[in-house]
Length: 334
Image 1 (cartoon, rainbow, N blue to C red):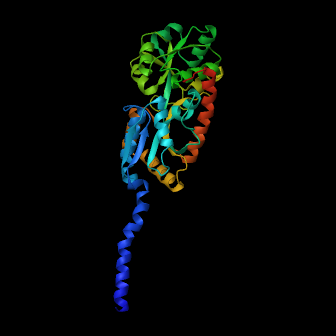
Image 2: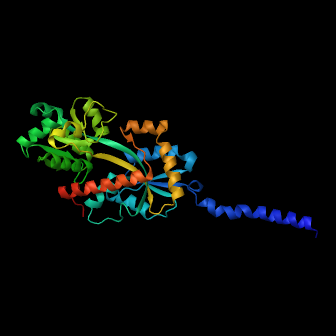
Image 3: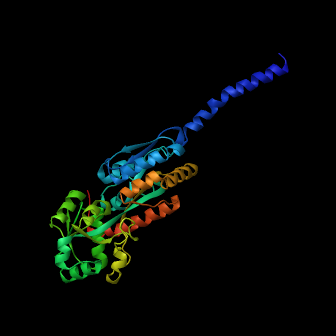
């Protein structure tokens, strides 16, 4: 055989080998197979709705994202599934203040470490909470501001009570932080969920709640509840006329008050840097799309994208903050 036919055969053989050589490498990229995005709570809640909006928004950049609801143990079950997944970008979790800042101090036994076992990707959103009173109660007691509330509570210790969705819930811990910083005592009454707690407030069984702004907004606008202040560091864009606890309670020891319900995306620990960068870019861009913004607005959520480094620092700070609050409250889940 001459030299020319040999060269042609060699080139053809190399061409046939190229797809086989590249196939395993392509299979490992996030876009090559569906990404599993775990929501550690039941369908229909804010995390679930935002996760599904994000999944649709990143389809062109990351491929198919399948949202899976894995509720249980206050969010720990779903978060643990992501913590124990392969660190290749194919399994993510929509973690939250509960799974990564509150539960580690609330539960006697945790299946994961909120720092060591995860790679923070980006914070997604903050949902403001609001200090609300039954309007008739507020009028009867002459309470229209945080200062009024603190002064009344100091003059009448243990005569005010507040409801929450349960021991260790965000509403409960916001109340405990308020009591500690303002130096007042109010009786906590836990209910089996946020809806029963709100019904108790509307019926006058409790005096005030630290409630989710989205769920309380209808009754605030109807005049049944009085919005005293939002619990976050900044005013809520959905109700900019309502002050923050920090600004309206500065003279009463509440100048540093900052409590919000946040959630964000995490991958397993040891996520490769190039995969992390790609995921962060895709999801941050998605948070600026009209569809995701509209979904956020309907939930009164504030988009809050970050770099992985910023999100990691934020989670560490939140974990340290809630250690003090949970321990002071005495709340525990066995």
